[in-house]
Length: 69
Image (cartoon, rainbow, N blue to C red; front, side):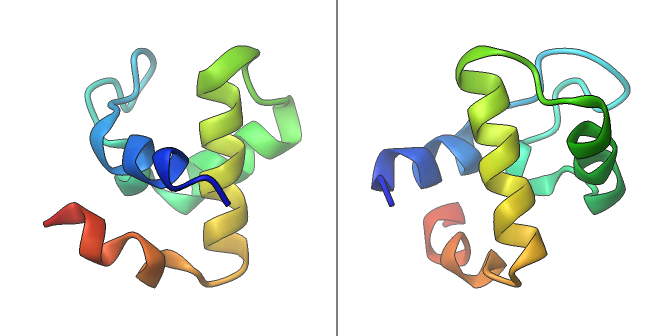
């Protein structure tokens, strides 16, 4: 896994929608599940949201904890 992706998850904020301004790593799981059903956006944002979805799905949130500091 690319470490830069993990850094983006803890520093990039959601640019639109109900959770605009929320860090991607802090988005609720239900929102990520909704995107997985509807389709993730194109480009880098979609890739990051899909990565965050996979992290949550597999219980790997602990990987982000040291990066949040």
